[in-house]
Length: 558
Image (cartoon, rainbow, N blue to C red; front, side, top):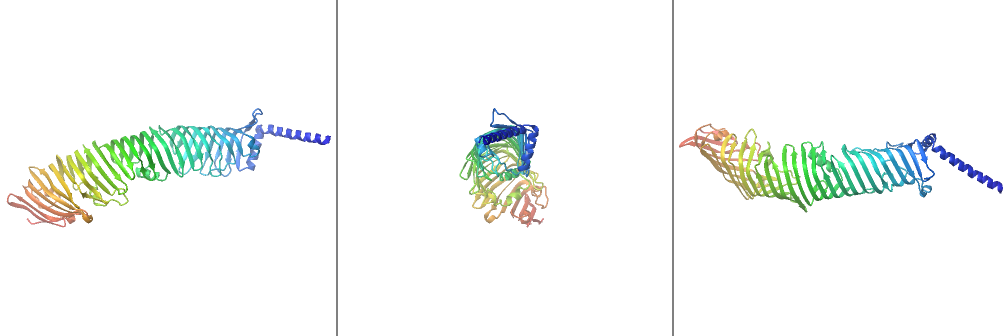
């Protein structure tokens, strides 16, 4: 019996001595190298470290120096100058679960594939770490990360697992966009992220927000942007299309101060705005919004000093107030857009000092129906005033210009069920002067009324030289027709006027009177081939012009 006790004591001493030898061996540089080689050989990871440090005064803590971990099947890398591992009693029953892991002064690199990590901890902590992630459509590079996750419970598909997180990042890049002084805290679960607070310096400005991500949708309580400067290589249409690829977004309150953004053929600067209950799901909606901006450039158009106040009820967007400067003129209007019946109603608008050059293809554009996929099929102008404006057409075939243009439009429908035209209301337009195909006009005026589906020019007139031209016209708009008729009477005017306007009849520079009667179809291409009518001109009792117009051809009888 005594021999057995001595043998047992000796065995225990040998085991203790062996443990001491292994303990001392592991903490040597050579022992650390051999230990890392053994771990690499018998695990799925390439593991390297230069040394292990343990203090008997802190038996629950192990420090690993110059740690490098690289999954053999992936390119993900974890490196740290120092990795502190703290154990608890659970380690003896669950060796893969630790109390705390602290990585200090290192890097973590990830690619598209998330590596499987056979570890978990009550706390995962970073001190002065760097994180890089490269994916096909997303890149992230952050430096000087300090913070942690508690608990850290990674899975085979999710590196973070679930837990509360808090991080600060000194600087970094998101898709080539710089940020700094990044602070974030919240709660993470797969497919559910609660952001209690996020604040950062981004794009030379600042961003702060709080919110939640769940079911492929971001829900933010409040977002505040200040002084952001953003550049894009996309056109505005391409930008809107790319936004459709992102998750849905809803924001209770969005505040924007001094935003500047620029893309291909568009730019906006000095933008301030406040929006409530804003939502983006392939289309923008909100309950209320106020905005102002210094400059907007879209293709060849330039708008300044824009101020707007909006609200949305159901599917109707109400523009309570809008003012802007365009081509040195001032535009003010109020109205609404109903998405259900695709109707824009301009309730009250004013154009003052407006200089507008018609686009080159404006006649072709108005002759064609509106795309049935468009969200606008009807446009009604309840009240529009025009003051001291200029309207220009630079088409070489038939240029015109009206200076100091004034006018008033009332209850006029200019688009109906996808067709351009004039319905319901009335319009009165006049100008101080103008030119019509290089013919100088004085005091031109136009009075339009509508009856049923017809637009009627009750009277138009203009002074030419010492004489006057006046007449009337009508436009039939039923069944998509655009048949027009026109009567023009000239008194004490050069009879060459009609020749200059494009009617290649007998030229005469005599002063007299003429009568032109004309009919045609504005929907035809070309319109001139549909023109039919008569033209007569007299100087006193002498007839100088006598022509018949047939299918655009002029037959002179003198």
